[in-house]
Image 1 (cartoon, rainbow, N blue to C red):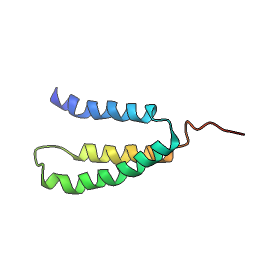
Image 2: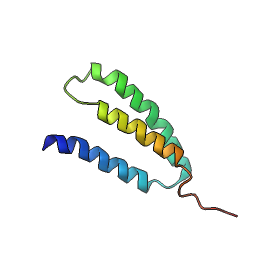
Image 3: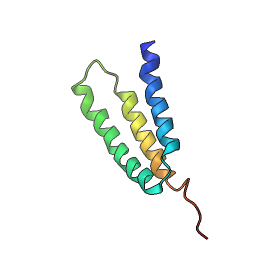
Image 4: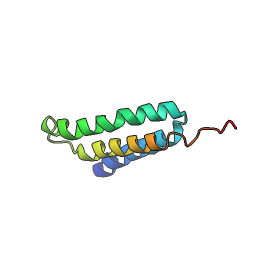
Amino acid sequence: MNDYLHYGVPLILAVFVYYKIKHHRIRAHLGVLLIPLGFIVLWGLPHLATDVDVDFFALGAVTLGANLYFSRERFQVDET
């Protein structure tokens, strides 16, 4: 049961962030922030926290950051 929570909670949080943040600047800035944060966690944290599986969280942060950045104009209204 603990594994389901370990993978389910970040997935639900990522889906919530992806659909609720609609302003294109916030999506772009959060995406640019999450990509290097994921790589820092991927390379730096396993040496400090040996009991926690951080690979899933780091790859999820990089993936969510890239999705937020590349879909930043998804909810933008055309003003033409």
